[in-house]
Image (cartoon, rainbow, N blue to C red; front, top):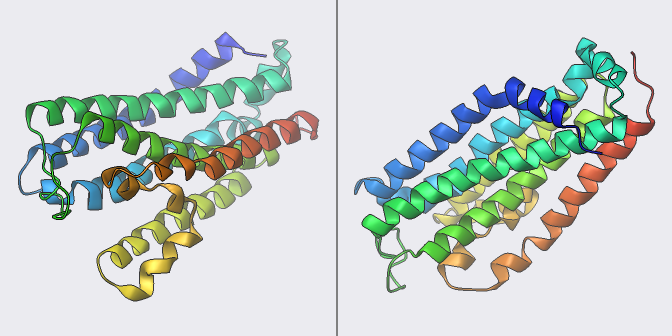
Length: 252
């Protein structure tokens, strides 16, 4: 089921965009967490938007390159001619997507933990004046797990489109619309949290509504329960894309 040569090929083809998005996200995290002038916006701007925008760009571009882009260019014919079966292609590329996204969040999380250990930020600093104490390592890990699962759902849906369509224009078009809508509506919903009443309910129109960092900050346990639905969607999307890719006619 798993093809190591194909996995290595995917690393070579996508390490540049992965490095760029991971580097930018990590640097932004360090800046927001370390500088006094940006600390109040750590959760509003960085965790509220950047942890979906940057991974969203990565999964949009990479998911198309992993399957639909290769079919469109004709390179999938070579991959399948090396005795690699279609189900192995779908499984390997899904593993690559999950692993690369996990590493992206893992590096950013470790960077934030390191900064927070040397310079803890109080809850009052980030705007939660009613809460005592500082941001903890546990909070950082839980917030990033929540963001990772939601971004994994974005990735899974993009991978489904990549597996379903033979043309990049359809794969990228629909995946771009889905990711773009999710990120844009999430950004608009942020204004609802800042007091714009008319935008409060917009968060329910995006998969990003399941990313609930405020529950983590308030010490509520339901942040994990909110991840059940996106996890199910992610699993269903990965499976759907793999099944369709296995059974459909390919222009080889």
